[in-house]
Image 1 (cartoon, helix red, strand yellow):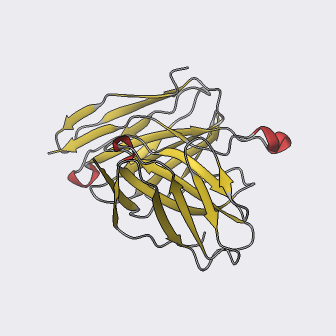
Image 2: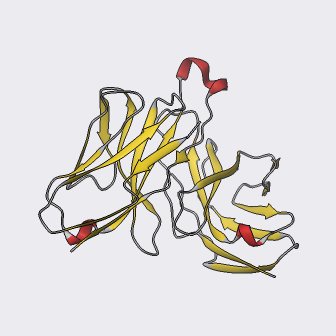
Length: 112
Length: 119
């Protein structure tokens, strides 16, 4: 699986959009970008995933560049409860065994 | 649904003791996983199972054993606890069936974790 690079930390004001970048310059054509988050000491929580098109769900939006070498997770209206570590993971989908390689992620702090 | 449950929440062991971390899921998922997370680090896969009776090693299996006698349960056994096994342990599950790929959630659901300290 391709490696990812994320900034170690980011700050965001409550109510503003949080834009979390991820670099995955060695991504292969059949690899998807996944985002999980981990709120203090809890188990990781799935947020969203995509291949090459932009994706949106009730939690967030995922913007993937045309060359697929980077992506951005967008939390449109960040709340204090969005304070967490966000992990960007690249992996091949359509395989039974899903090994998730968690890096150190981005620690997002949402402040009042 | 309770999702993925883990017991105990916390445990302190002495070096050389043994224990079993329990994990159960009620979502009828066929895949189950055990991860450990050391302070400030990402998760590392210890063992996984693709169905009842089938288990395989992950990245860091040494010092651990697993079994999967039912679809619901996936216990993790520590035989001779060592300080290096001090960590937070997470169990996860997912659904995958190659013949019905469109139904696969392709998402891992995690339990709340067990915080283990070995002194």
